[in-house]
Amino acid sequence: MCPCSVQGQPDKGSYSWLAGPPGQNVTMEEGGTPLLPDCLIYQIFLNLGPADVLAAGLVCRQWQAVSRDEFLWREQFYRYYQVARDVPRHPAATSWYEEFRRLYDMVPCVEVQTLREHSDQVLHLSFSHSGYQFASCSKDCTVKIWNNDLNISLLHSADMRPYNWSYTQFSQFNQDDSLLLASGVFLGPHNSSSGEIAVISLDSFALLSRVRNKPYDVFGCWLTETSLISGNLHRIGDITSCSVLWLNHAFQDVESENVNVVKRLFKIQNLNASTIRTVMVADCSRFDSPDLLLDAGDPAAPPCCRVFDLGSDSEDEVAGRAPAHTKEGLQRFLDRMLDGRTQPQLSERVLETRVAKLLAQGHTKPPERGAASTKNKYLIFTTGCLTYSPHQIGIKQILPHQMTTAGPVLGEGRGSDAFFDALDHVIDVHGHIIGMGLSPDNRYLYVNSRAWPSGAVVADPMQPPPIAEEIDLLVFDLKTMREVRRALRAHRAYTPNDECFFIFLDVSRDFVASGAEDRHGYIWDRHYNICLAKLRHEDVVNSVAFSPQEQELLLTASDDATIKAWRSPRTVRILQAPRPRPRPFFSWFASQRR
Image (cartoon, rainbow, N blue to C red):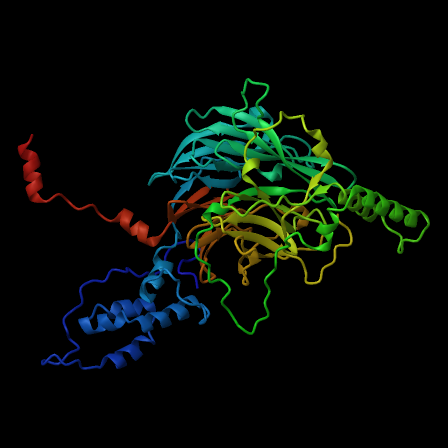
């Protein structure tokens, strides 16, 4: 049950959560003996709602003591929030009463400010790591940087139209908040996939460098404080291509010809019109959070966890075969096809895919197995193998020696260009991926997916299966390489496969939030898997962002060209509380100093 209404305002019966002084003991006899025993009052309170229990606790000391009973608030918690009884209390919670209060009073569901400085759809929001600033991207082709004070104000607006951009779509602050990565889409025909990444200094707001990015929905991301990842796409056939991921230095005015400003990270083969998109980096050194208890549920239910592909199946083993064996296999396949021994007759697209697979078998590097280290990072991206619709998540380990552009000058060592890089792990979600986000500790990956019909088969890579309107929010543990059992549901999307767009989500310590096409943002609790709030806009909600330093502040961005700031009821009460007047002594003391 959502404690906040559709508009994001508290219910009319909102609890003050202020334990005022109890009244006189009107429920006691003159000798101090209670007229009603505690057990009977407890049974009565079990039939009351949370607001009535809190109000009754102000009557007298006896009722107040019963109204704080742990067993009473455990029942109130499970009944009000409709949490499954086998889900235990959050490990960090001190009491059931405080846990009820946390979910009701500390969720950012009260609208406190609406920003209207953008003139078109707002597509993305990102906070600085300090939480003092945030950036927004929009169809009006600007990147705006804001001061995150109690009253949010615009700090700078960068117009990217002079650089032939059509619109801005994504931004990310580097680790020390000195640089901003901004990703955009070039002007061009409707089917153009070219984009660019710009690096902006947050000291002078100067444009430091620009990097080509194709396809534009690779978005780009920081790998280190001064190095960023971009993409490029090379067509090989009608539905076959290869994606190259590049490591770029943020400052590209290096004078020495012997210093790299760009280095190739990985080169990955794409089949059946798929491409690599939506790259992000997970830092293994931050995998220090306790296990989330998200797999509690019906013990009789069959397990539905997806096990990650660890690169040990037959397909990856084939990738290590010698080129001579590959040529022999390809020759046998072509001979059978020319002799008419392939049944049934293969279409051109199927034939292209099979030949591409055979050619790649002898030219694909197996995963580079380094020693397990917290210094390693994971490169995470969407991809596919059956159709252009992104239905898989690829994971590639980045070793410490790969995190710098140092090495041979670009152009040397081209013998390695003949090789593709094999993925370390692959997740198939059997649906269209429309959003991804990492938990603050980088251990858990949250994925927005619109499922394909059960048992759907992709016969034509250019005609993916229809996708569900309901969005599944899936959770994957990057430490154990397994999927958490239950998915979060509430939000919806309506666009078909060929018009589907990215809906950004964000994760805080306790909550996860996402936009949706149903004109609402949503907030769930990560531990209990329950929807806590719906945040109203006038159009599609494209992006959400928690303040990294204050999870009781959430921003939402929408096609209605607005950004809304939401705070928790607790924070709103604190900010609106009247300031205490100075005591008379200090007033007299101040007047004597004049």
